[in-house]
Length: 160
Image (cartoon, rainbow, N blue to C red; front, side, top):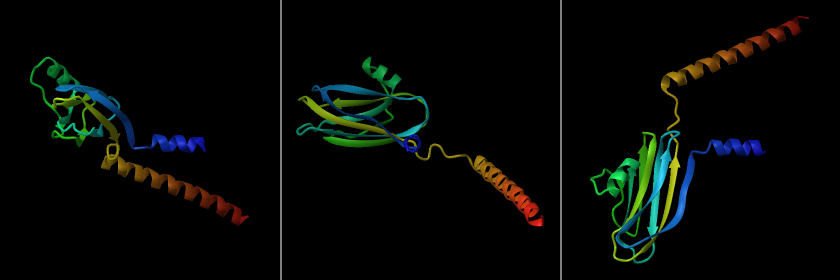
């Protein structure tokens, strides 16, 4: 039974990465690093701030852009939520590499922010049409070879 559980776990198309609360000082930010080095995926994130914190936003960017932001240089975001007490975003990451989520508190009071981040790999591992055709052709060939072999063996037994 443990082998079946392992197979089901490996076949899972969702991976939870972060489910934590962060304390963000007033007019400050925190970041969470996300490494996508194996395969591309759709990244989902949802945050919820405690009561009274209405000026929080969440931004997804490449790690290099975070370095630019910390130096005060212009930077590019891949996706961002509007400011609010809660928000969600979803982004299809196609290029492998290092990414990060930046949670910014634009308010005048510290905020407790609960962040959830997960990945979904569905649709990413689909075979190309050529490979699908090849898999079907090979499957048919193996099936008919087995049926032919079995039929010959049965005919030999019946003729005796």
